[in-house]
Image (cartoon, rainbow, N blue to C red):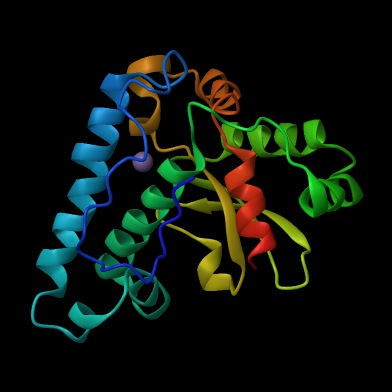
Length: 202
Ligand code: MN
């Protein structure tokens, strides 16, 4: 399991933790080439350009997300969100949460299936571009949060656990306009071992 610390250098391109074709047929190699090498890398390049000569240059990516706004926030948050997203997926995914996280999901949402349905429905109905998040607070209470554009629960004081990218670039090559199919298939490669690890480390 790859776990990047987001105290990582802001201008470092984090490689995918699996091969480009590893998530097929649910996410194609073509999509991952564009998504990682063009979109994600594009945010990092733009961030480098925007932060040159500023106080942000010496900050970690997470600190930039927490302490910026406007274009710098947009590009920093998109960089952070993408690293987090790619690391949530795996060709050897554990398909079900266990332990404390599973208990918390059952207590708050009724069942794991109900949580997935809620996140899927929010992803389908999110207007325009954005992200659907599962997050927690330090006490372990769970939150499902929908955010437009580069939005992240980090700026709400929450701890992100999982994100679904609903920007069209995340799915259009494979699913065209059928966002629901893209999200339902994404569940097949979400690694709940990673999500659980984040929950247990909160
Ligand atoms: Mn994306």
